[in-house]
Length: 66
Image 1 (spheres, rainbow, N blue to C red):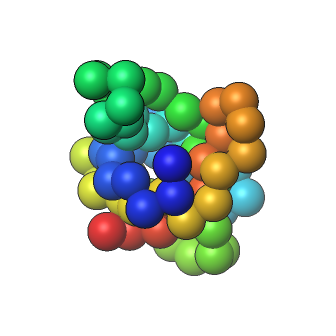
Image 2 (cartoon, helix red, strand yellow):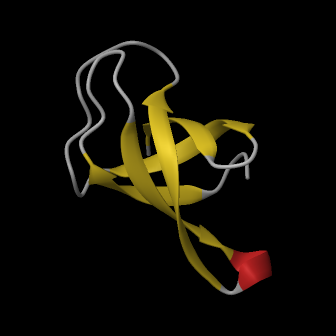
Image 3 (tube, rainbow, N blue to C red):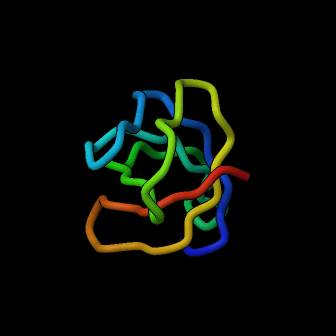
């Protein structure tokens, strides 16, 4: 999961959970994950491209802008 690129589909606010769609090549499609900012900062709006920097199974990722 770490290093995969996705798109924000539900705004990620400061300290708040959002949602991202991440393309998972092994599963030949995109999947939705709960997402937090890895480093506190400005909110990430829907449509922002992000990269996964940490993963906590089963469905939580920490992201930063791509």
